Image (cartoon, rainbow, N blue to C red; front, side, top):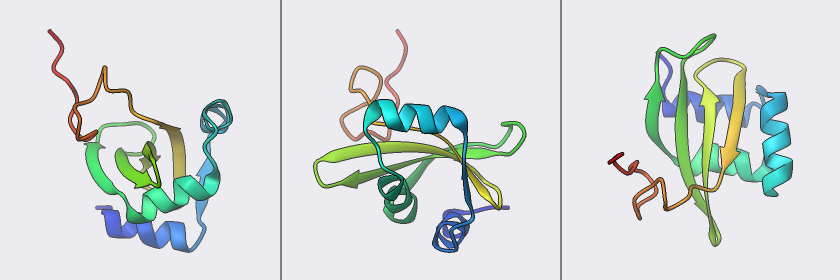
Length: 103
């Protein structure tokens, strides 16, 4: 089973692949690969998607300076960056870790 510590180890050993989707979104959102790596190393694992295919994945939240990021990545080796974004308070509580309940 993969853990946050495993993700940090994979990132530190630069065993990372980035999906085309992630590259496009990072470019659109002005998110750098260095930002992604820092969030993966320093951030908190806030959701797990164990049934995702082809690999289980997770959502990691981290703060860099004045920006908060969410990064979705696989629990695999190499690690796949699936997408990255700045969470929107219309969908997330003020802690950026808790999804708002759908009414």
